[in-house]
Length: 285
Image (cartoon, rainbow, N blue to C red; front, side, top):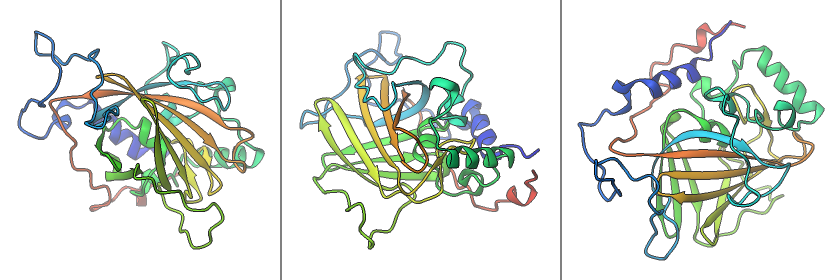
């Protein structure tokens, strides 16, 4: 049976102290700290000069919960509940619907059959296993960290995994028209954001067909739309409620939460996946 090579390597990298900090020791500046020098994770979230919550920082995946079918959890009141205490690490990385009723996303028969086929082939066609860009949910739940850089007009997210790069535009531009034949679908789609109080709402459309939402192959098609609601309730915590719509793949929209934890005194390491890549020739069913 083929090993999930990319996922396995990611887990090893995330757990190895030798790989987690390649720079000489340094202390991240402008961090609220306790008397013992540790970061004060419960300090208030920082703000930008224009008054918005500042999401800048290095973040690691911190588990996730589930929202009521299609609901828009805001992090308070109708927020998705936390994941089960006994949930294994990376559960939603392998299965985006881990915490949904029935333990899977509400797939159409076509999507369920495709996911079954992908799983039976041991995910050998997962883009991550071929050094190609991976989808939003795999990026959010990947054990390798991600860095957010925020300006008034744009937030860039740099993912250590496969050196992924996403742009959330805050400059007032509109998303391309849904049926515009001149718009080329992208691996990460086209993402525009707007502020609702302290919540950043990022909407992504025009996603390339054939994407994977998780390692097991839950599909996302070119009919999909992803709405992410970013909140930073404290300095050390980031909550992202992700609502996924795709009439070809799912019978109804669904919402999952992915939590992120701040990382300090470290940084991303270089990840060049396709340099002298030797693994895929050995994949076996």
